[in-house]
Amino acid sequence: MHLNFGIREKLLAPQLLGVSVIIAIILFYWQPSQLYKAKQDFIESQTNLIKTLTPSIIQNILANDLSELHRVFENSLLIHKNEWRFIQLNNPDNKKLYPIFSRKPEPSDTLIKIKLTIEEENEIFGYVLLYTDWKKARNKELEDIRLLEIFSILLFIVIAIFSFILQTKWIYNPILKLKDLTSQLSQGQYQTKLPVITSDEVGLLTNSIEKMRIKIQSTLDKLTNKEKMTRAILETAPDAIITMNTKGIITSFNPGAENIFKYSADEIIGQNVNKLMPHDMAIHHDKYISHFKNGGSATIGKNRELNGLRKDGSIFPIEITINANHIEGELLFTGVLRDITERRKIEKIKNEFVSTVSHELRTPLTAIKGSLDIVTNSLNIELNVQASTMLDVANRNVERLLTLINDILDVAKLESGEINFTNEKINIISFIKDIIEINQQYAEKHHTRFKCTNCYEDIFVIADKTRLAQVMCNLLSNAAKYSPKDIPVEIFTSINNGMLRVNIKDYGKGIPKEFHDKLFDKFTQSDSSDTREVGGTGLGLNISKMIMDKLGGNIGYSTIEGKETTFYIELPVFKEDN
Image (tube, rainbow, N blue to C red):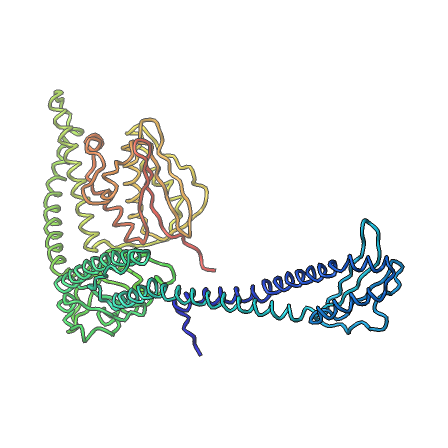
C-alpha cells in the first residue's frame, strides 16, 4: 500500500510530533518531578507535625510520666489515622519507650519512614520513628497533575489544529492552486497566465514561474518560427538534403532531393542510402560509416565530388558535404548534395578553351623565345645598352608567359584527370638530396642555399616521382625567393602516426594572416610587392595541393609573421610486407 505523504501531512507532522513530545515530557519528566516534590512536601509536613509534639514528649520524659507520654502518642495516632501507621519513641540509649506491644507495618509503595531526633538546647532526649502513608496525598496530587496534563494536552492540540488550519489556508491551498497552474504549463498550455496568489514566498515563487513561463513562451515562439523557416528552407532548397542513421537508412528526404533523384520521399525513406549510389560507390559506403564510428572523420565536413544514381538508373555527378550530429541521443548523418552536371559541362568547355588558347599561345611564344635567344646569344651583333635592355626585358616576359601557360595547362589537366600518375617506391632521403642538387643553383641565384638537417634515415614512400618532384621544386623555389640573403633554407623530416612529413623552413617575412585561408587558391600570392620582385604565377601552390591530393597525401604550412614559414608535405610511410 502506497501512502501519499503530501504537504498537508508534512505540515501536520510537526504538530503531532510536538504533541507527542509534550506528552512524553509530562509523563516521563514533569509528572515524576511533581510527585517527587509533593512527596518531599508531605515528608516535611509530617516532620513538622512530629515537631509540634516535641515539647510534650520532652516534658513527659523529664517527668518520667510514661502514661501521659503514651496518651500523647495515642491521641496523635488517632488524629492522623489517615496517614500515620506506626510511631515509636526510643530514649538516647535506644530503649523503646513507646509503643510497648505494637508491631511495625508491612512496607508498601506509599509508606514513608521518618526519623526525628528529640532535642533541646543541644541535649538529646530520644528518637522518634514515624511510619506514615502518603497514599491519599499522592492520589490527590495525581488527580491535580492529570487534570493539568489533560488541560495542557487539549490546549496544545487545539493550538496545533488551529495552526494546521491556518497553514493549510496560507500554504497548502496556494501551493495546490500553483500545482494546478503549473500542471497546465507542463501540458504545453504556456498561454495560461499565472495570477497573483499570495504576497509571501509562494507569491514570489509564482512570480518566478510566471517569468519562466513568459520566457519559455517567447523561446517556443522563436523555435516555432525557426522551425517554420527551417522547414521552408528544406522544402524550397534546390539542393538535396538527406538524413540517415548509422546503418545508412534514410530518415528524411527533402523536395530538392526528390527533384534531383526523381524518387518521392515515401519511396526512399526507410531505404538504404546505397540505393542513390552507383554500384562501385555503394560497396564502399558501409566501410566509410564504420570508419567514422571507429574514430575516423576524414570525409566529414568536407566537400567531395562523387556520382549519384537516379531512379531511372542514370548516373550523374554530384557535390556532397556530410556532417554528423547527435540528435536525441542518436547519431545521424546529414548530406547536402548538389547536381553539378551543368557545372561539369561549363568546366569542360572552360578547360577546353583554356587548353586550346594555351596551346595556341605556347607555340608562337616558344618561337619568339627562340628568336630572342638567337639574337641575344648566337649572333655576333653588338647592341647598344638600350637595345640590350629591351631584349632582356622581352626575354624575361616571354619566360614568365611560358611558365604561366604551362601552369595553366597543368591545372586544367589535373582538374580534368588527364594526367596519369605512375606510383613507385621512393627512398625519400635520396630523393630530397637529388631535389636539393637540382635547385641549388636557383637558391644561389637568390643568395641562399638549401640545407638538409635530417637526411640520414632510409624512409620509403609510394608516389609518382615526377609529380612529387614538381611539388618539392615549387616549395623549394618559393622558400628561396622569400629567404633572407645568406640564411639557408632548412629541410628536415619527421614521422608521426605512420605519416612521413617533409618540412621546408625559411626565415623570411612569413605569411600575413589575411592570406591564411586562401593561400592554396588559384592566382594567390601572399604579398604583391614581393611577387613583383621575385616573380611567380600564383598557381604553384594550387598545383602542388592538387598533386598531393591525387597522391593521397597532405600539404600545409605554419608561419610566424615577420619571422619564419614552414611548408610541409605528408605521405604514408611504406612498410615492406613480412
